[in-house]
Length: 201
Image (cartoon, rainbow, N blue to C red; front, side, top):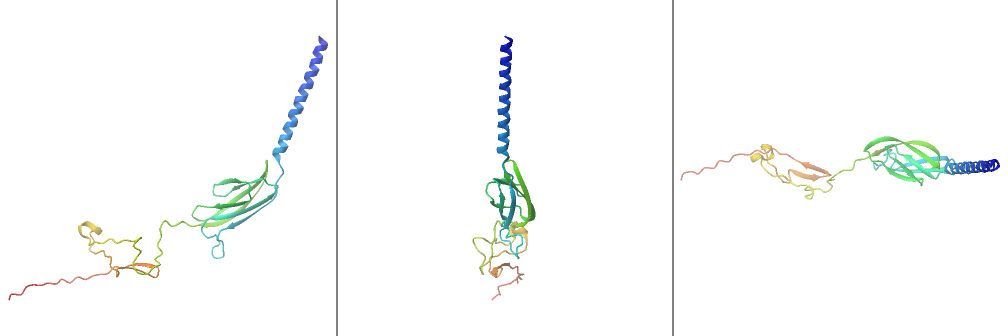
């Protein structure tokens, strides 16, 4: 019976050793696969749409093209500097900034391969214009465009026009479009009273 106990104990020790060996091998192999290869040679170039000598901060669209390249990178993470962070598998990224005005953004680019990563940062300065809700360029001389403009006509009586002592007209000599400008012209009018009376015959 004692021999049987030692025999089983020996088998148990071998079994535990095998389990530990398999467990360690599996763990090491997994971590090697997850680690990946370290990315290197990370380069970033930026193209601000409409950037020129006259418009050093772009054309106001807020569009920027990022060209990113790194050896051994499988993906990229970009923090655009405006609170937005995105992941990409491609190194050509078009992004539009939305905040109106001229601002500088610190953009951080990370090249990834498994758990290995390298990063770099670039600063870009660009302008974003506010889009007009409505506009009229007044590019046709004459009367204002009737599809965009109308007239308020009245005399100021009965509370209309804040009870002002004036007349509102649609006469051409009070409103005209000339050379890209809408001209609203006020004129002082002198009214002469004409008294007619009937003569006795």
